[in-house]
Structures are given as C-alpha cells and as structure tokens.
Image (cartoon, rainbow, N blue to C red; front, side, top):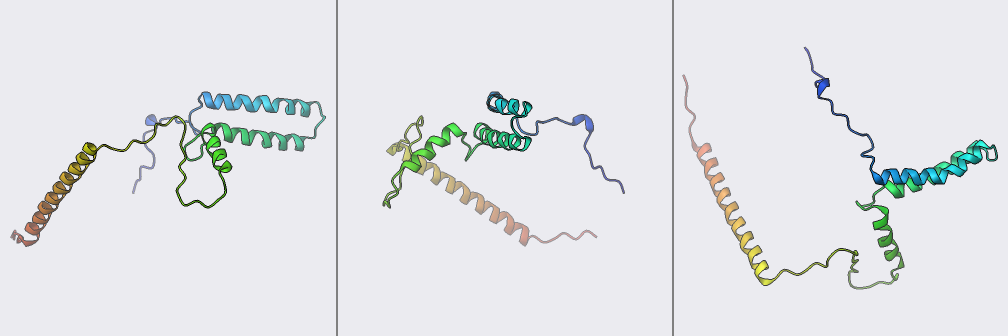
Length: 154
C-alpha cells in the first residue's frame, strides 16, 4: 500500500510566517531599536548587569511591539485607545438607556425611507414565495422518488 503524503515540491508557495512586514512593522521595529539602544550601550560598558539589561529590553520591547503591531477587536492601538479612554472617563452610574459610542469619522446611520422599507418588504416576500415554490418542488420530487417502484433487471 502506497500513500502520497506530500504534494509536488515544485508547487510550494513560500509564505511569511508572521505576516507581511509593512511600513507599520518597520516603524515599530525602529522605535524599539531607538528605545533599546541606550540600554544595550550601557550593558556593553559594563555599567548594568546582563540580567537587568535583558529584563529592561523585554519590558520595553514587548509593550511597544504589541501596541505597534497588535490588534484588539480588529483595531490598532491608535483606534481603540481613545475609545477605551472615553469609556473609562464615563460616569460609573446606573443608567436606564444603552450608551452609544460614536466613532469619529463614521457617518451616522440614517433611517431608511418609507419607499426603501417597502422595497425591502417586497423583496423579502418574493424570497419567501420562491423558497415555498422550491420546497413544494422538492417535496414533489421526493414523493415521486419514494412512490416509484424499482425496476427489476433480471
């Protein structure tokens, strides 16, 4: 018994492991290097112990890297930080309405006109009729299949 475990090696398509390295990634890397350069220089001058330098490098690089490259709910840091701050500044009282968060730059949602609502209802009704016809046709086909007698080949 023989199994073909691999595809054709010529069809291999190389893909980056961590995604594309774009302008955002280059900028984040540059900021990390600029912030870590003085610490690394101090370690080469033997003024700081290696353990402290390693801890400082990780403590600086990880938050900057996450803020620069990470997404929370599909938003980069410059989008979700103002929303988070706005939410934290909100009063901590019980209110009886749902608070609405308006994201800057998005147009307010407009209510559909009467004609648009009627068109949507008409479209939904036509869809329901089409589904009912399809269901009736399927039921008829199934009934014909079940009630048909098998042909003896013999």
